[in-house]
Image (cartoon, rainbow, N blue to C red; front, side):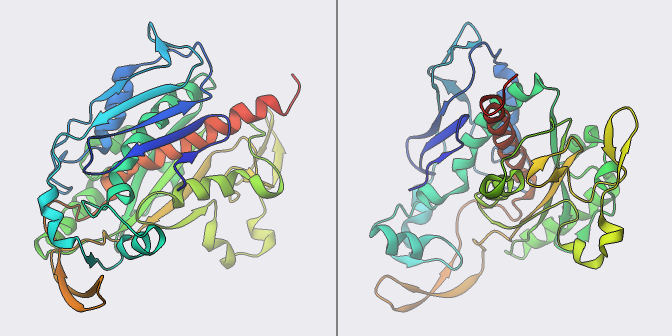
Amino acid sequence: MGNSFGTIFKLTTFGESHGEAIGGIIDGCPAGLKIDVEFIQKEVDRRKPGQSHIVTQRKESDAVNFLSGIFGGITTGAPIGFVIQNENPKSKDYSHLKDVFRPSHADYTYEEKYGHRDYRGGGRSSARETACRVVAGAIAKLLLQHYKVNIFAYVSQVHQIKLNKSHTEINAADIEKNIIRCPDEKMAKQMIEYIENIRKQGDTVGGTVTCIAQHVPIGLGEPVFDKLHAELGKAMLSINAVKGFEYGAGFDAINYKGSELNDIFENKHGIHTKTNHSGGIQGGISNGEDIYFNVAFKPVATIMQQQQSVNKAGEEITVEGRGRHDPCVLPRAVPIVEAMCALVLADYLLLNKVTKLG
């Protein structure tokens, strides 16, 4: 089971949605990094359930307890262990699903692969695991701050409601001004109202999170198989409910000719490109321009409506969602996308230091 991510800056997570706790071990974090526990907790709070009326109402404090690798507020170079207690599981909400395969969930595939599964909230396949990624991502952000790297993400689309602004027009300070985390007040209001209506219908909806990484050093990424955009794609596609990843011009690149899409170099206070259709990555290596990409999230699979399915015996049944679920995962996905981006950049930054003299 793939429970680890990264090569040098490496995260291993553990725990299930309705178990005693979730947690992780971060290995490879350099010694001497000042740890801002308050910053880390704030990052986790941006992901936690119950933060607004348009997300799941499960109540968890998600308080992070560090167990090792930090002394006097400074990293020691040893593995950083941490744990987050599960305070508000309601396993009884899932007892009726013990032998049921829910549509578009991991129930059937887990059962077939392992012959046994934790049906309480999806167990290990639950998005609750992503809280551990946000903890590690926050530490990666603290490391990246030493290199002036800035990462932020925002909701750019909910279903067919799309923010018509370029990533260069976004003011990062506006993202946290509303519960949907869209940096446009008018569009945010439309998105929130739409999600409220979807929730009343017992349905769910998806959309897009856009992420931007600024001041990324030139040279991150490896040729051939370990290209920077390939690793970012792997990171984003490992997040629950993600169905698509595109960077730079992405799929829209097919609408251009080469003469229109090429990023022309110029030397003005250093070498830069006039445009950035490449999304800050060329040949799989960062070129110093802003890295930007979109992550597509599907509608949450658990809906409060009856659906046809089958059980372990192969019998046709009717199943309906119960308990506390997100009508739209996007607001809570924003810090997860940022975290996974930070993990990739921190790992590649450290890798770059061992593959180049000077």
